[in-house]
Length: 257
Image: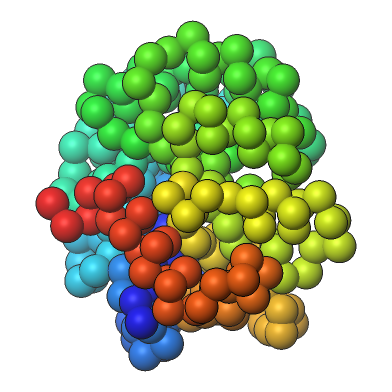
């Protein structure tokens, strides 16, 4: 069985000095490939560095909506992002999007930065990793103003209504440990309804540790517990779900190219 963690943050301080051990533990559990997702310019450079240094690790480069204000203060921000994207093994633009739940950056600033990154990524021909929280009504008009946007909705935790909108635009769905502990039946029903061809798995490590490890720091190895839960939820064999999600991840991010 082979699994791919399409969204983790191995560059975060939580793993400093023990990245090899974390990767080895995940590999032993069946996780064979990792995508290390950037959240700011500095963080994206760190993610790219890990990807260049570690086998079977790839990276993304992007500015999270929480860091949008900081990005705008740098007049060379877009050029710096382009430079990171050009580094070896950077396979997507992300984590980008809108977050109207915590609002660490104003709405207009988040939207401006999202548009800037969409333009950068489309020129590079890369897929996107989207972080959308309590901001769907603002996101879709922006998304629809661009053509041929490929990518995944990270940390999907909404309902069938939004799922239908996501799928109608050909985007993938990233499911993680949230599904193992949510009490929202609409979220679970939507996760059950995700078509096989649009499903990828992720951890968002070091966050969102799945049941039964809720008191532990999340690591890529914990994706196995999420996969087991989802297989039962969706009425699939674990090996089948693993194969489907792995093939999708490889195709979306071009991991074998």
